[in-house]
Amino acid sequence: MEAITTLTKTFEAPSSVSLAYGYVDPLADDAPGDDVVVTTRRAIGRVALVASEAASRFQRERVSHDAMSWLFAPRELFGGACAIDACLDRDACLRGVLVHGLSLDLDVAPEIVDALTAEDDDEDRTDGDEEGYGDSAEPGALRLFTAMIAAYDGFETMHAFHASFATEPAEVAGRLYCRMGAAMANARIVEGFDPSDPLVLALVSNAMADLLSMVAADPRSDLAAGLDVNIEQRFHSG
Image (cartoon, rainbow, N blue to C red; front, side):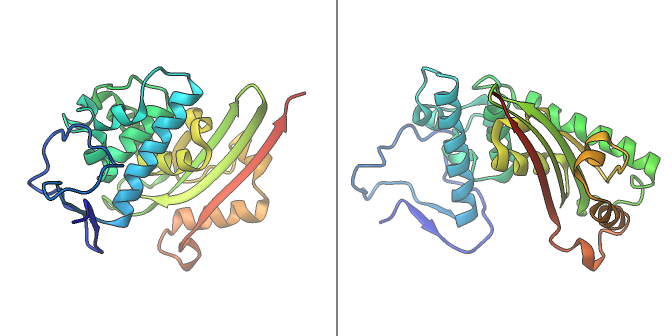
């Protein structure tokens, strides 16, 4: 019997899943008593993403901690569950990605991570009210978010602009981290599009700025379908 079965259905945490399995040797043979987890390929990808980010962080920061041990240990971050189980879920996956991307404590309280995205969300709602977005936006509806990034890692300077549709800033933050890793730690993520932002003026063409202004005003237009813009500028040191 395989320990994981992949089905094309929406993930639902099975009632039999305990808060912490304990370490299970993945190189050992399957056993009749192995717990069966019914999930999806997307959910498995979430666990793989968090695992790879944990391992990359530990190597990058020379943390004397085993990534597999972190994955299998119960964490306050995930409400007492271990990452290998919890990160099948999208929200837990985002927490795990942000914890390692922002180099937070290995078992930081979930309220701290959630507060980071909540603060961005509050700022976006305020900006939206001023620009006419706030009251008109439907809860959970796709909205245009833009992000401005300026980062220096000791080897190169990167300036980047991103625009895509999402339902909340945390979704954009996770998307950016998947693409550029820790460089997105100082990203400014806002709802809508401001053509007067200095980084926008430096990186975004007039034609693209016009397009983004249109889709920000009308997210349901054909021009908005599948829109995902990334513009980067890098300068190597020395």
